[in-house]
Image 1 (cartoon, helix red, strand yellow):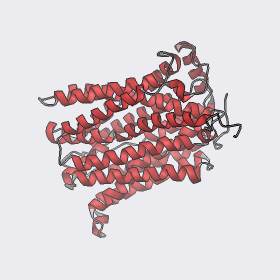
Image 2 (tube, rainbow, N blue to C red):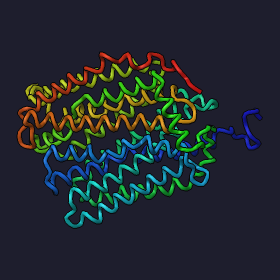
Image 3 (tube, rainbow, N blue to C red):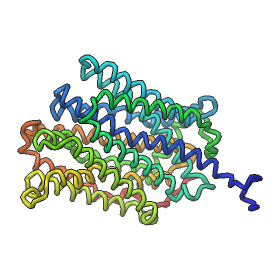
Image 4 (tube, helix red, strand yellow):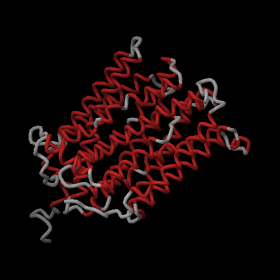
Length: 439
């Protein structure tokens, strides 16, 4: 019997890996599947509440405000233990809050629910999602720093959770596109609410000690944890990287609400086509995770991120040609373009997160993994909110409405130019994957 095996012939890390993959697999799968209820919400707002494109986009971005509080949730998760645990309980709390919010929306929507009330419960849902995501991300970061977990530190665990989220996204969009024409939005929300209840039950059945997370000096109080997070953010390689990464999103005026109305109101694209488009995008995301894990882990993060940023801009220029009808004149059906190109562009925004999260995990000082990863995702969430508001302002300035899309090509062109701009300052990102590793 090998010295690395116990009396029953099992490797000591096998049980730990099993529980970690169950907990994180379910958590990230549900996280990816959140597109399912949101598809129902978007069509409910457009068809039942009769909101316009700007109002839809403002609501979509405003309810993401709880995501900005992730550093607070990360600090609390790092410093405040519940029954001797500081990761699993927060995942359970997050799942519980989401289940309560979605199921309450179902009950209230049977009557005339106001946009304000709906927004409040969507905020609660995103609060729960944020808390759960922070705890999940912290576990991934901690395992990435584990001296005994070479596969995790090389990016295998990050790729696993990336693919779990992608699979959830594929199923969520596939089922959402098919269900939106067959079931009421309330039925779809009930289904997702019950999934969250199942996640809650699975989570509370996993004892945190079975995960054997790396020991860290994180049980030192919130004030000490804030001090450690502040010290980490003062490191130039961390601060500059996060600042560039957030700015690379914030500077782009997002026109998602406008494009949603353009595709459904103007082009009369069926909901099933939109669902297939998102499925195609999620499949591409899943492939990206596999390709990165097998072939691109050794590539410098800056080079990968620059390439993705430039590709995003090229796809946006392609959208200009699409809206002008150039592809239609070439014989390419609108539905085909939306499935392929729009599906890929939507997920390209998130491709940068995988190499960047691995870079930050390597740079992160031990003991504040949850706090720093939460700060990163908070900065990204805030950047997306700013991007959404800029998109509303741009659409308003160009006179683009739910019925007038004449200014949309110019708006998309401006969007593409703004996407190119961050490339001129990409030197803020360290050019070595493990340039600094702080213990």
